[in-house]
Amino acid sequence: MKCLSDIGEDALIQRLVRLVPRDPSPAAGPGDDCAVIDPGPGHDRLQLLKTDALVEHIHFLPDAPPRAVGWKAAARVVSDFAAMGGHPERFLITLALPPLTPVTWAEDLYRGIGDCLKRFGGVLAGGETTSVPAHSAAVISIAATGSVRRPHLTLRSTAQPGQALLVTGSLGGSRAAKHLTFHPRLKETAWLVSNFKPRAMMDLSDGLGRDLPRLAAASACGYELDWGVLPVTEGCTMEQALGDGEDYEILLAVADGEDEALVAAWGREFPDLALTRVGRLVAAGTGDRLQGGWEHFSNP
Image (cartoon, rainbow, N blue to C red; front, top):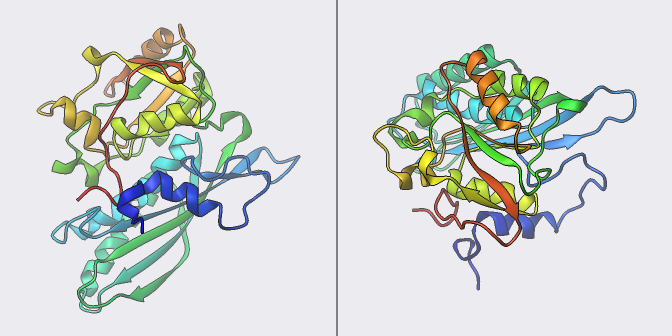
């Protein structure tokens, strides 16, 4: 009998979504950063739907500050809205906690969620609280709605061979602390889709080594990296830059030749955040092969 560790997260998702009724005509369904719902003609904005979960010992350790855990729980969802060119709106929060969890821990968790919503937008619409057995891990699950203007919607699956690949910021080192304090690139992607709309885009949650192959596969492309210019966080190795995950930077594809003007304009708009051309998309079945990154059910 096969176990989840035998097939991994991506293959599991492909199996599961075939077992339930699905929207016959979604603007974007399972497999992108958010699901996209088209409310029909006459509506300038598309609806974005997102759900995400944090699990103790997987996404945070027991001694992590609860306010930082709350920030991360909300910021991960905001990052996915950013990756689609959209904005967050309403949040539903589910807490599954052991009975002996201190009340102050839950309150500080919510304070952290509130910090993120005040900074990036969105309001609490409801949620659920439930208990788990005494020695079980705490789970924080967030479902949220957002929206995006029709012309600004950006998917993973719309890139083509020959287009340039770029990433924001630097990669690697998230495990030291950055995974609890990162800022979703919401302002930056709003500027991108308004000025240099990417041909494809996603956030880097599982590491470039895992997420670049996902974007390329969704767009039926291969990829080639310029290894000498990858923006590795100071003090990190190339292996960490590819595989640590939880960078929450943005990976994007733009038309070849457009990248120079984009990088120059970006530098004027965001002088404190790098944007680096790291490679290009090529024909499917050709190019580099990456390994590493976070894999649920396989990583220890």
